Image 1: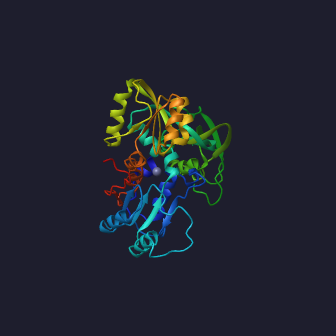
Image 2: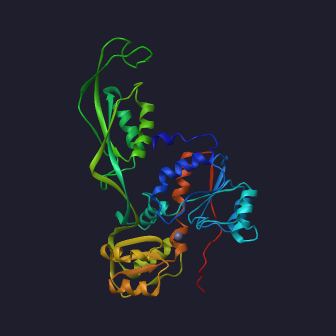
Image 3: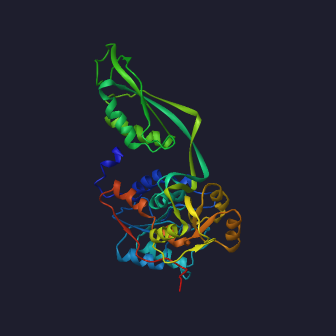
Length: 377
Ligand SMILES: [Zn+2]
């Protein structure tokens, strides 16, 4: 991420942080029923310290006040249903009052963070050692474009590096995909008012150039072009952008992948318990079997049991109900219910990493408040 490698040394305002987070997990990826983004506060507030938490409750607000935090980033939306009144005697009203009095902003990343590439479900899939990770269900398709940049031969390496360091779109399991065409000849006449890198005003100029092309979404291409313009020598860079008819970037809920080698169900259960740091989980069918393919969906993912049964031996999620367990069993799928809280609470790190990588002057904390609501006795 070359543009962002030069981490900004000034203290950011919330809008800067939101821009970075929304490049990572765009708001339009969220499910239609969801509510994500800035919940409370001003975009212009300076942010020295953020606190990442799964949920916002009174304990987390107290923790934020104690730690002098400027913004709390939650996974579950703080405001979900529309508010018709702010009753300061209600729990939510009192929380709002305390947040505003202490100038603490709240920003929520929910299904957009579940869905985005590199988000919560990818963190879990990688953390559990899955390979060849794919989407469990596609929820959003985005138009892809081919971008072609004309570069003098002296600069194509640095332009290509800027592209590769800022691109996120992959072709299948391949990242960093570009194509550089052979030598050609560009011509131009610098006009009055120009300040050409090569040539003189009013004189017809010929330069050996090549074309570097790559693929991305509209937002990704705009971001990459900002980085390219910092290393491209020309005052006016020639760029062509073509809509691709044959490919779209897909996003989706849940992930599945395979284990490097098959393991017994018992062994896999121990691995899962250790990863999620839990003493117990619920299993729909404990009959011994070998596990090679694994699907996962953080939170309450039982509506994807059918999809998981088509691609995996075992499915990890939370909030499983009795009849959903029956359905899984009838489909020959073993479901491991690790609990909603456990499936999500340890996967906030990508958010923190995203902020830390870009803003050296913004400290990231993770809530120490345990938000579990269902304990095993
Ligand atoms: Zn959740």
